[in-house]
Amino acid sequence: MIFKIDAAQRTTQKKSDVAKLRKDGFIPAIVYGPDTEPISITLDKTDFMKLYKKSFGELVFYNIKVGKKSYHTLMKDRQIHPVTREVLHVDFMAIPHDSKIDVEIPVKFVGTPIGTKTGGTMDVVQRILHIQCLEKDMPEDIEVDISHLEVGEALHVHQIPVGNWTVKDNPDTTLVTIHAKKIEAAPVAAEPKPEETTPEEK
Image 1: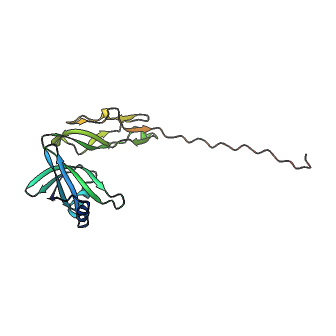
Image 2: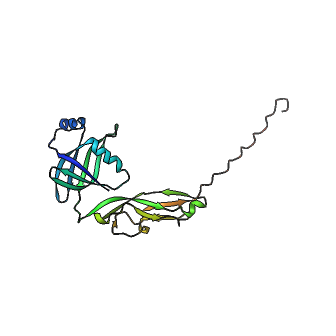
C-alpha cells in the first residue's frame, strides 16, 4: 500500500517552536536514509492521521512530497504521548527501489490444527517475522498452514514457506504450539472431624 502526502521543510529547533507546531495542528517529522541527507519536515496532523489510521496492520509506504522533491519512504518509528496517545513525532526512512530493506511482516495462520479438534489449545507465540528483501519482492503477509499440527507439536521459523526474502529471526523460534488440555485435579475430600464427647460420656 502506498500513501501520498505533502509536507513542508522544517527549520525549527527550539522545543518551544516544536510545541507551537503541534499546538497549531502539525506533526514534526524527519526523513533519512542510506543515500539521503536527513531532512526535517512538518506534516499536517489531520491529513497524516487519516492515512495513519488506515495503515493499522498493513505494511505502508509513504511518498512524501517536499517542495519539488519526493521521497519514497517507510515509517520506521513514531513517538506517542503516554497519556493522550497523540503522535508527537515520526521517523521516515527513504527507500531506494533497488536496495534490500529490513521490514516486519505479519504471519497469516491458515487452517484449524488437528490438535485443537481433539481437545488441545493453540498458543500463538509470535505473529511477526523480520525479513530482508527488495521492495518489489515484499509480501503483504506470509501465509502458513497449521492444520496439520497435533497436540504437543509446534511450528518453527525454519518451517515457513521459502520466498524471495531472507528471514532474520532465529530458525528455532516458535511461532505456534499446540498444548494438551489441562486436566483439573479432583477436589480432595475433607477428612471427617472426630466426634466430640461430653464430660458425662468421659
